Length: 435
Image (cartoon, rainbow, N blue to C red):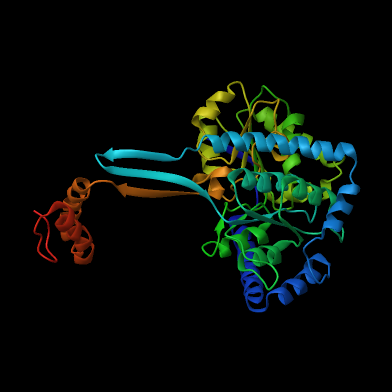
């Protein structure tokens, strides 16, 4: 039976925090619905400390941001974007339209249709997380979305040059300097100057995630992407320093980011706890990472690989990094995860920034029922049908007539019956069923 050498926050603490977030978001979205641009501007001043007549960046502002980056900066962004684009293209190519004659004269098909407008949120209040622009904008572009807008909060009081460059180079059609709930509300609800989108994507903090949840139904969303989560599954084939580094690398995202070690080695568990404390003394982002580790960090010692699989599937973490004697065993048997990082040579940061898989992933146990953002999220798989012959219409109509009668749906039945009469030349009583 597994034992916890370190536990995270109590469920009641998390539940109370979620209630406060939900109520705050509900009020702010209602204000945006009622007052539009005026509300958005007041919220931007209040939360982002930025006051503008128009939060859409001009071409000059975009170029100024590009000019602030070095050639190396721009080349690195373009390299990362090409990796994301390459993988997204492979994903898109795996999705085929279908058209098949299922019965003589009956054609069924489906086609993949991109949404008309997507809103991409790029978090950047604490750090300028430019990689989120690659993951959302490029993926939407590959899917064929005609209009793509992006919102990112200011960094230190003004648009973050690296984020703006990433948004522009990825191909965003409109770039806004807006963060938080007001950005989500403006994109989903629309304002006097911002046309609403059909779908919202992108990670963010608890407020952004809750705003997306409340907007779901009015618009589509990619998934519930709240505070970053990471789970490291390891055994004695690796050391405490490596595990601690990978835990803190994700804990620095924010003070609510769970970082969990799951291992079969108590020695590794204890070594990792010790290494975390050592690294927190020298890590430049320790002020945030230490809060996350203190509140939400966990260390779990399991009896076997099988038990680690069971626990990991229960946790359903956003990121699952596996460093064991048999990494492929976990690839084969894990079912609940946002993304897997297999072996000590890779890590979550590669996925976050550059390797090509998407980093917008399910959190808060949503990995039980969905994967992460990918090309398919921007595509609607829509079916169609054609009946090419009179005989086919009459034949399928007779079945439909009788099935409608079983359900008591006379109107549905008449849709079939009129075709049986016209194309099959059979006498079906009005409101009755075909023989």
